[in-house]
Amino acid sequence: MKSPKEHVSLLLVLAGPAGSGKTTLCERLVAETENTERVVTCTTRSPREGERDGVDYFFLSDERFDQAIANGEFLEWAKVHTNRYGVLKKVIQDKLDAHIDLVMNVDVQGVANIREAANADPAICQRLVTVFILPTDLEVVRRRLRERGQDDEAEIERRIRTARKEVTLWPEFDYVISTRSKDEDYASLRSIVQAEKMRALRLV
Image 1 (cartoon, rainbow, N blue to C red):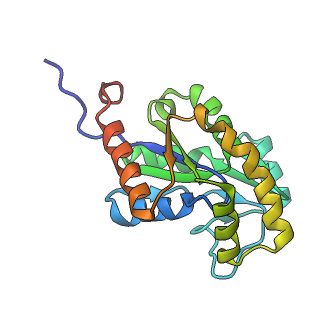
Image 2: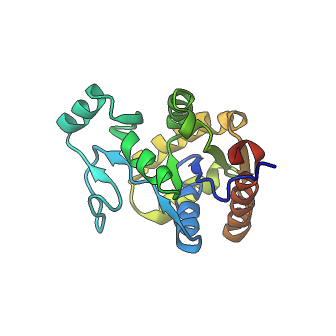
């Protein structure tokens, strides 16, 4: 009798409007779960105070980002507001090959690109799990963005306009977490991870 594999690494992708809490969920999952790391993505935006290159993001110039696109280095990339963000294929492949679970939060439009790219790579496709973090209403998002204190009012309103479009896309995801408390959202996320680890199609 063939036995299932003991461990299959996952690529867990969280998406949702800015301020939905997806970053907090990712950080907590990494902090409280063994053998789990956050995917470090690339961006053309400038570092915020306290951010470190190679830890929070790979901060690339527009020229270097263009070169990575031309060389086919990205699993996906997208322009978000005024900056570009991308995920390097090699970063993903090396970690999954080492049996490390990966978690990442991306812009909603980036998930479709990741899914399309994964369809061309069976090793990634078999491990991909997408989760949409759905806020109860956009006023919650607006309040959280103001509390963060990272954006001016014009930027906050621009993000709210984007959020109105993004929340309509939740049916395209494997799972949706309708936000409640931070602990309840995290418990839901952990349940998703545990269930996906036991899916037979990943254990063959």
